[in-house]
Image (cartoon, rainbow, N blue to C red):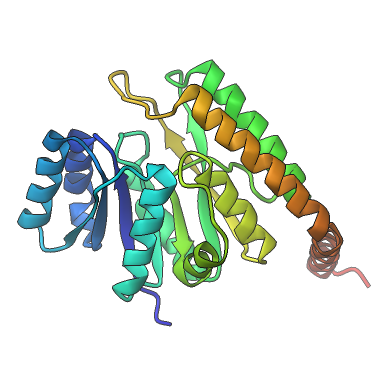
Length: 261
């Protein structure tokens, strides 16, 4: 398939943020899919106006809130149906650096089989509790993959190869809320999809609105990690063999570079 990329933006009550984002990405000339995850009427009106005003903006509407993961999946499926091969996911809450989109896209175009995901570079705005909780999830992901290849599993700034992720979402019921981001990375890794990490600046706006539900989402994430750990046990021989092969390949490349006999 010819490389053809678009942008997917899940939106839930971030109408002003979505409008600002559309204005920022306009110079890139990329088709953009907004997914309205049953937002309030004010946000819905803003999104509908954006879709009417810009021919390159497409709106997908949810009548019921499906959560962050459900909104992303709707956008990815819509992108594949529209003939795109890759989709860059970026959130509408102002956390991500739009200026990094061309770099993410360039890496993806050079490695179309890979998943390109962000590794946050935080400033002082990040809450310490959120940062610690993210680190715990990263540790679980390293256990579930028997690898350190996934540097950050929760950043919502990433480029998906659609021919890998959409079929996966039809075979496996992925998490639909905040458990989606880490689970989809682990399962793509299990399927042999290369993971490429690109550092990117992430900020927490002072007036930002978080939709993370402390008890419900932490429970969903905990339950997800339990499932994935059991899944890892069944896949452990293959994962260890893959790691050994990667180590040998890296050693051979290094020997070749140094001119070793």
